[in-house]
Length: 240
Image 1 (cartoon, helix red, strand yellow):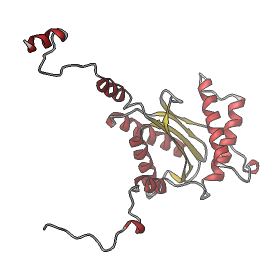
Image 2: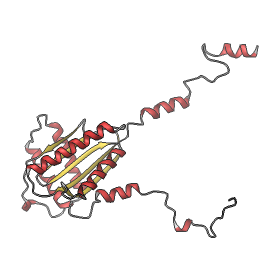
Image 3: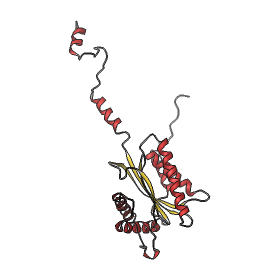
Image 4: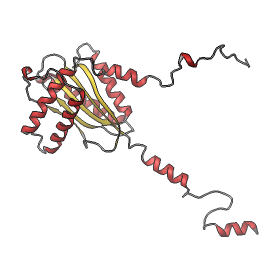
């Protein structure tokens, strides 16, 4: 009789002996967590000098390398895709990438290995900023752009702060997005020159970290045992 009463009080199709409810609070929280698992986007901005003469061959080689590299990551990665923009100047590059932390680590590893090669395409690479857990992307796809704007080194500012360069890069990205035919307007050309000046000033300096230094910090464990945490005498085994 008790079993019949319990069966009558439950919705149809639900066994009185099995907890088959699917609309519990725990279940709803798990659904919300799973829906946001692949939505954590991080943005990396790094700069580097072009190694060797600033000719079209080097610029095309850099564009081709990153086109193949990004395409390979997109095919093999099971996380978020890559969006961003690669600005290839006559003598330097600015690379803005939006993707997961795993992909960012792979990109920095490739950049670090590239600099250690026999004939590297880039040198003096520096990580400008890494922004975590972005609410939205700045770009909808990834693309390289070879720039022909030349810089007169006599007009370079003697000092450039990383914050100023980052602001100019974001302004440049906004200008590029507003230009539908990829042609540079006067405003964008001025932004291009200011960004190039900042890159040439910051790459040789030690203000910013190199990709290898950043990866060492990134991979360093956070649960480091301090000397003050070591107990004396040391603990011995009770069982062998």
